[in-house]
Length: 241
Image (cartoon, rainbow, N blue to C red):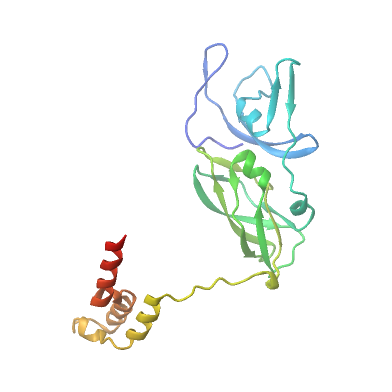
């Protein structure tokens, strides 16, 4: 069980106010699929489990008032990802703050170490709980890896130990292409004129060798600011917009 990150007081049916003990995550099987769901733990209650609107929403439930039935829709299932590749499981309980990213350590069972893997997020978890994992390439070390996890919801989310949060498959170098930028006119012009500038005249003689080295690096990085041709070109571009 996990404590709430902020105090919450609930008003129950008899009009009294109750402070929850915390939250827990349970594995429920719906339509043959087992998924984790988060529940609020009450100190005293006449029922073991009360299904609120949050649970009905994330489980894609349909309330049929005419037939007095509760129907759970089929959960999204990615056959290709789940039938191939490796599952990545959370190694410890972790809370992800609302609208933020967190670096989590995951474990892959029966996976080869020192191998690059292409990571894909759990789509079911993204749709139902707002927990997304961006596609990335990571390496396993002793069966462990660190990946980014993003909470897209307006409240903190709990990721329990052992929960499958992503899938991975060995990356193939022949399917990866490096992205290279085409040098622009400014880059070519900067490279051509870089060696023609005497940066020592822009530095105070009292600077140490290390300070001069750092200053030279900054001047080279922002050298366009000292050229009238660049300033004139920027003014022309601004006036034409």
